[in-house]
Image 1: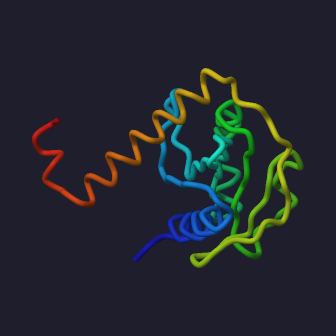
Image 2: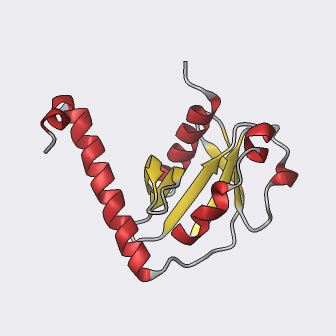
Length: 145
């Protein structure tokens, strides 16, 4: 059975794909922080979404601020009934479930440093390629190549 965070992330990914983004989940940034969802538009804009399944989950995790230098737009995705007053006004807000998400608030937009953007896009492409290869040929990783 999937946990609430996984279901919320699935809904967020569906929403972002519909909005024209390519998406990856559980993506590790250069600062070794792992974002729940990272998304890139065709023109290279980068969004990060932090999924919070409950108030306790939100209160227990302050590392989301470490993601801000790695995206042009930062969002929280929460379930229906989450106390939305907890989400900082500068952050975007999505209400999600396992089937989709609804945008309630756009974030303040940042600007990723050009060198960091290039590095992120390259890392995103490599991660996507490796994940696709693992799906199409699960034994390919065994050789270490």
